Length: 149
Image 1 (cartoon, rainbow, N blue to C red):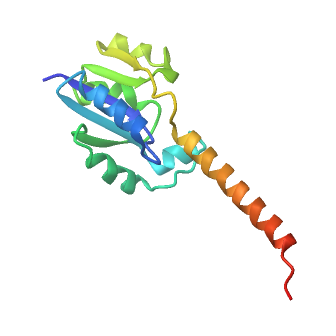
Image 2: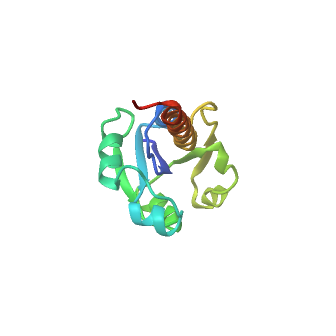
């Protein structure tokens, strides 16, 4: 059985995430997702997630491509995960290209998959923020032009 692993936060789950998981699963028989814990996201990545670790874990477990979800608690656990879970292929988005090549020394195939270009969690947050700004701006403008009599 070929085992594949990928790592990520998977907050605001979207079709780009699904594309990555589908393509990762196609590289083997068993897909493990190491999901960043809330503490790791905050303390090491300096980002706050919308959904909690448990909520994000439930979402991932419901996806047919995912066989197992484990917690990612530190940057350094990758080497030990390769051994503990008998990983054949390590997969990340190509925005990380070259960053995990050291895992090849562990006998693991390292694959960087292209991202789905038009979507990301950051883009969703940005678009929602912009939409909210426009909405608030329009509301303020309309309030100024309203003559309560």
